[in-house]
Length: 279
Image (cartoon, rainbow, N blue to C red; front, top):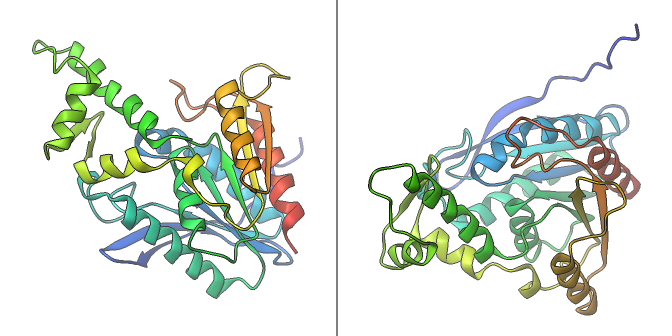
């Protein structure tokens, strides 16, 4: 039996930030250094469900000579801060700080790779960084407001299992946020400030980032086209001058599946895209 390929261990460290520190994992490039990639993670439980896929992709890219930095945002994962302290503007600074760390360590081209809400954040940060080689999006959230509504529904589902029955609908939860109340949802706390930032974040409202953008969605069945609503967003971006490539590959929605799932076709497609742009 052929032995599985070995990978150098990732380097764990804390990156000094403001406020507090950010937990990072760096996968050093193997062989000739061809560039680097910063991963911007999904939010809340989607991040936890995605860790295996992200780790597999990071090791695959490192084997191609691309250093990969995994970043836990403020108030998330093993970084400092509580989920109640998380703010969109702090997260944007986290991404820019991590990019600066990679540039100080790598002479080659730097790309961003964002997953779900992290994809929207990566594109937001790319508005302030004009030196990126590309941005890779995994199943990006296109409307922060829609994502927030989905997140609030987790609270409603939990309330239905309690004797109180909760507030009844997402509109009431939004009113509570607008009134200054933070909400505990599925083990995470969302603040009014973060909720307001999510409502304002929209892919279609962003300017072209000045580099190629690769948008990859997943579908359970092979040969499926991008969902009509998402395809319409992509078409608008292309009309606005984005250098945009979209694709759909077969695989499970690993960020939301009950069991830990993988999507090998997504790993292969992403490695090909990022590898082609490296030195």
